[in-house]
Image (cartoon, rainbow, N blue to C red; front, side):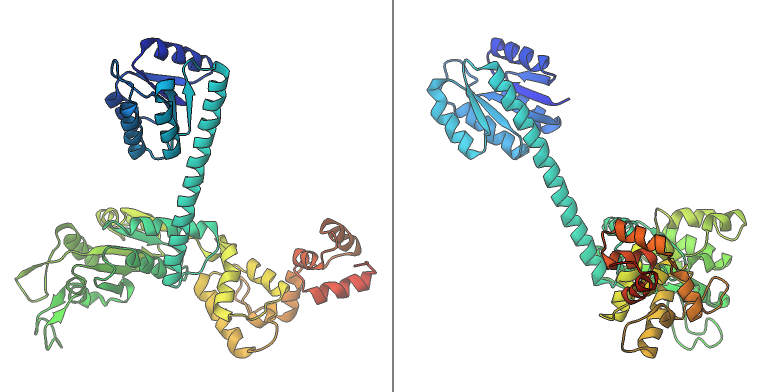
Length: 448
């Protein structure tokens, strides 16, 4: 229910307006005090204000109403205000209308005209709020897309946009983030996006693949080592936490970190303290930790392979990255990014969209690189990508052809009618190139 605030020093005016507005379904708040009116505007979602121009006995200058109007404008610049005027302060009311008040009514007022004016202004206020919200969303969307492009993220799907928006949002804090997703889905790019939008974007950003850390050297890698701490340590070694001090540490494939390493990692995350291997001196570090994994850490906790307390320390915010097969709209923008302006046939596009992409973006990138080398010119067909089927067998030209629908005469005629003879749309419908469709139309004697 829309709230209407009425500010007037005359109880009879408040009573009359309240009764009129309540009959027409509005929630009414009344006050004789400008100060109280400002509190209402500041604390409540007021849809419209009806205010008098004077609030003190024997005052007719309109200065009080003018002051209240501009004070409300500071609190809510787009709040619709209707001024109640007497002939003596009409000039002042007209001045305020020019300054942003939306209307004025003279005493005595016409009930129906006032109700119509209120309804129009409330609707206009809602439309303005919706427009501003859309504009803010558009600006935020453009900002997040620009940030994503700056780190090399290419996407068009709504699912990926949600991940990007959340990444940009959480980047502003220093809380730990866990990025989950299949191999090759772009987890490192999301980590780079967070870093780029973080207050720490100019501070160190250290990346480490936890699965590649040798089990017997984890402590030295993470925390450093003094000279002579172990065989081959000829000089003091700075660890990753020390190198990332004041910045961000990206722990990729955290699910592959051995249990002993997890215990050591948990301690430094809890206390910010560590010791170099072979030293008794305690050092302090302050780092933001972003971690990533393709493993199901909940299952790993259940099987005793991952520490539950470490999981909750790392997973304050989780960003779950969908696989490429779950964001089909990203496939062709990625292909265009990897292959530039190369022309890809409709049949090839259809095949790319149907492929499972178990290796995600990394697999797609490799397929595009292969095409760029083996077929540097000409239209790229489906077989040029040399995709592997689900059994790991490379698809032959005949296999690829089977991916496209082989239409009958009736199906061709139905599709031509459905798409009003637009050959490009019919070809896309069947997963064929235009030339291939023309051959089938001619074969079956279907007019085009």
